[in-house]
Length: 327
Image 1 (cartoon, rainbow, N blue to C red):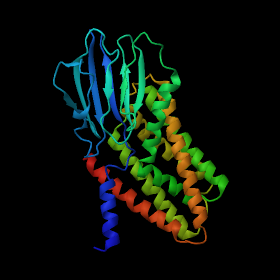
Image 2 (tube, helix red, strand yellow):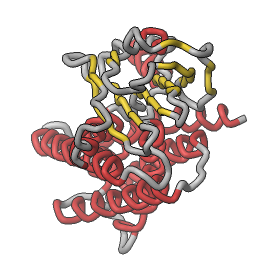
Image 3 (cartoon, one colour):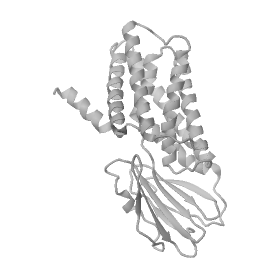
Image 4 (tube, rainbow, N blue to C red):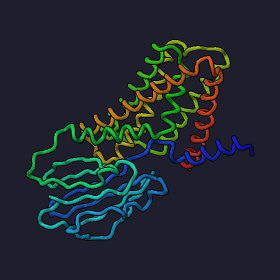
């Protein structure tokens, strides 16, 4: 096998499971009426992070009541166990991070129904749960915790990024590109909100297969258009197709939000923050791609075909792997 072909094969193999956006690492603390606390720890499916639940720790005064149990998930792993933190419950409990190089979301739900969310980072790997009588944190504190998670989910998803790059290749002209990206944004924002608030049941495996299919289909159509000398999609296709594909990608974003521990019907601030993070990362990706394309215009006439070919091969590879995984 030629070195370039081998490099591409290794890249595709390594990104089959990582092609979706990186799901956040999450610690949930749920206080029950009897004072016991149910601890949940979730890590992504990165092999280096499997087992990270065991590096998690609470204050020494929290006594473990039962052995941790593993909860099966499509991606990653989640562990649950119960602890007793004494008469004070969660008040003043120190929460250490998972030792991750990325953000870890800590979601606390008290027995009185109140909740709070904080994001731990490598530079600030621990937090102290405030006392219940302290003023409730402002809504923007929860939203801010989810902004970084939304941005990371898009920025670490090669399938989403390749789709955006293809869209810019397929549609020419500033106005047409703005319309196409806006239609894609409206589509994925709609399904993200509906899936998060209305608890629409979806199959994560099927959604990932459909996302890979959207990349492959757009790459095939773009290659055909480039070969035929077409400049833009005809008529309403310029808006309808991106919006339709956006509906599928929005379900993928909703899965990332669900993995962060937001329950159906709650957390409007969390939903808003996550969506802002996704849109901010998408805007940055589009502007960066447009700037690179403008600099390369006239110097690399084969650039559009190269992007389309890479996206087509990657999309086909991901689609095949994910469909096989459905069996």
